Length: 57
Image 1 (cartoon, rainbow, N blue to C red):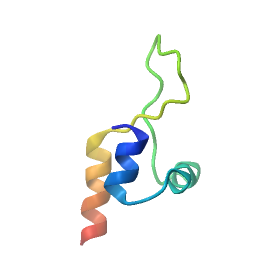
Image 2 (image 1 turned 135 degrees about the vertical axis):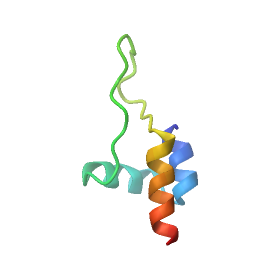
Image 3 (image 1 turned 90 degrees about the vertical axis):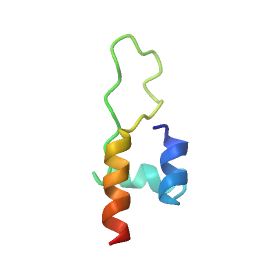
């Protein structure tokens, strides 16, 4: 998932997403070999779905 998709799914802003990454609450996938743009954040869908499941309980 892209950063925008994660923000939409969690209902948060990009700045909040970056704060949660810095706090260790979310971890983006590591840069793939040969990927030139290290700034492009990608997240595993299963990680985001587990966060959504715990917040809905």
